[in-house]
Length: 203
Image 1 (cartoon, rainbow, N blue to C red):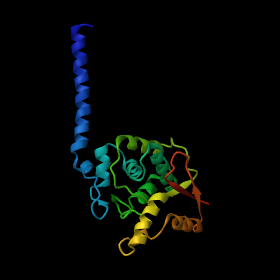
Image 2 (cartoon, one colour):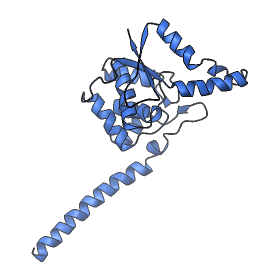
Image 3 (cartoon, rainbow, N blue to C red):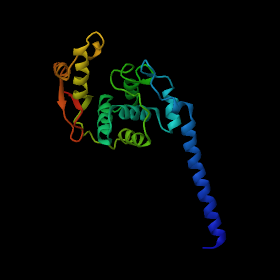
Image 4 (tube, rainbow, N blue to C red):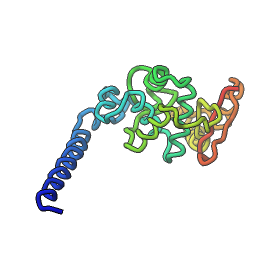
């Protein structure tokens, strides 16, 4: 290759790396992105729309990805709860926002009883969320619209049994929760590959 051509390729490569680096730097130093932290009351005070802009994505995708990041630890688990939330929203981005940001803020289940959105999503989880919104994830959760974690519920319930006055919100065991949901007309769904989470669909 001629020296002149080699020089031009180096310039182009340098410019590309600079653009990518600048985008990454903007994301790192963006006040909104850095402030996706839940306070003592469970609320993330940063603007959800600002957080979405800082991440370079839409508000529905950011909210869904935040929930997926907060609720599960694996890609399959995150896709499962994400698809369940999409089912619960009847595949409407507007209804999804209403369900995940009921008072306009991200946060723990102290803020939103349906699901936590307290953790900032990774770029991978953002991509997974977008595949759901794009209609590329089939309903492999069999119509599920809710989920819970029986082992965690029973661990919390043990705290309640030991100190009821201190942990009143943990008064329900996993069996209690299941019984109530069955009484409410739900059916239990277990999703292969997501063994720690119990899903629920409408009958």
